[in-house]
Image (cartoon, rainbow, N blue to C red; front, side):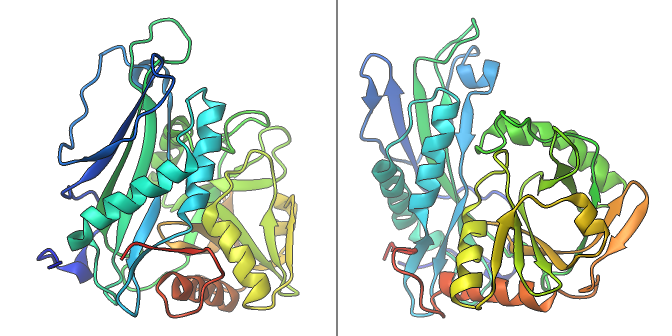
Length: 345
């Protein structure tokens, strides 16, 4: 299929309307999801009283399709995105989309939009956004009766132009998630709650906020949109552990890469802010679908700066190895563990 005439190397990380998207519907009357299918219509028509508009009943996912070195189009671990959305939906009383249907929907959307998948070596990818929401009218506080599941895609450029440079972040006084709240699911409402905090952070010159646990405000949790990783002085990869942290697919993949590809020791445990401020870690980074790893060079805690040994000039050596290895797996340059790569064509 002939590719679209785009300046692939200079795409931004923003929405571009593509040709096809997938839509499936759940009705209380049927008691199940229909088989769904592709459409060219990018518009959604719903009641002004739709559940998603009144009570934020919506969950979403994000993943990418890549062109590999040998010319195949693939997605990375879509079954894990499917399972996470299944779990997220259950928490918000949304009928979960079956894992197989989710993966098939992603496959259909990428296949139908092959012309929009960036060529290998451009640094660009096809970003996929699956989401599900309450679409029927709800005026009393209760779950909607009917739901819609959609998947669209958009070509995006690399998250970092000119390389992954270390960022400057702050410890925020806002709370991201309560101990028994919704921090461990990918609900739109969690991200809405972080918007004021991120706007304030940007206005103050910081790239992101680091949230502490709401119960004691002593432990590192995550940022508004990414999990956090640390490298200890003895080269151990230290991963914050909490029931209110979103189970990132990228983080789980990096943990496997650290252990099985790089020979690192991995310690998943509660991480205390005091450890960070006392200099017990030499590298730090945020991890997620968009950037894989975004290195943190310096943290500001209420006016006082704490800089990691890796500094503000370039990504530390361990974070760099982790990022390049996972990118190599995703792009077909390094052999992937079994089941990680879903081939589209």
